[in-house]
Image 1 (cartoon, rainbow, N blue to C red):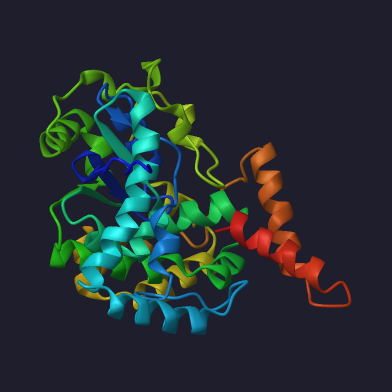
Image 2 (tube, one colour):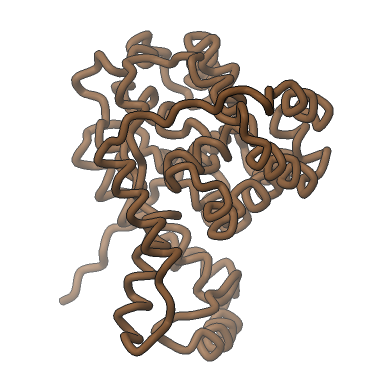
Amino acid sequence: MRQEAPEICVEDKLVFLIGAPRSGSTLLTRMLGAHSKIHAPAEPHVLTPLAHLGFYDSVEKAPYDPVIARAGIREVVADMPNGEADYLQSLRAYTDAIYDKLLAPSGRELLLDKTPAYALVLDFAARLYPNAKFVVLTRHPLAVWSSFVTSFFDGDHEVAHNHNPLMERYVPAIARFLRERPVDLHHVRYEEMVSDPEAHMEKLCAYLEVPFEPGMVNYGDQAGSSKSATRGLGDPMTVAKESRPTTASLAKWARDMTGRPDKVAQCEEILSALLDEDLETWGVTRKEVQAQLSDIDLQGQPQKRPKATRHTLERKLLVMLRRNIHHNALGKWVKQVRNICNVLLR
């Protein structure tokens, strides 16, 4: 006789860390992973594919017919006794099993899922796990953009924006989530967190209903911290160079634009595409950012490029490959190489 699989529910153990790439989420993950009750594995990317199966969102290209798949899943859900509720329950059976397998071996009480791409499927995440904890991290948009360009595109701001207009995608999505608050959430501003990490970790622990542990702030000294969480796909691991939060990077984005009117012009263009309401929700005002851009010395000496590392050389090679690959007789191979570059340069 077949035995029924035990029902698994991890919603009350699940914490989502929502933030754009390069917003400081790896740093916050290191601190949370240093807590004795929190397990912080590498980015699992569990929810994003499920959000695009056709009922909520869909993909444009796939090794199957996404149009037929979208129509099919809508018919399937319509035939379920409780419609969308049954569909969400079925999806949770899958994600609960994965999350449970990640958490159980750690022996800890809470599982942290830090996957930046979830910021673009927040409506789905809130529907799937309405009772989970959501920690939303924001950072000065131009600091995020500058770090993204430097870390993933070897400083080539034009290629970076053509490949991924990051701020135009993430700022509106996260800002709307913060304003509408469809779930219980806790907002953390990067600049405030690194300026007074003890106070902000105490508040965050209170939200997560775990006791504050001073060792979270000095995450580099914690032998039991989840070090796997410090690296996501393409993460250059700059946070691993420090053992606790530092304010050293707060003004770095502006210094990187000294003597670079082209970069400043691009930032002004990015800023013009963002709404005042969204900027203020993130924690900055348009007037404030415009003043910061105006203060940059366009006639000054540009910052020296940092010493080349294995990571920066890899990024430079990927940018060159992506820029110079064109469709030709090599066909499928060329497309595969380009797709690989797209993934690694996300």
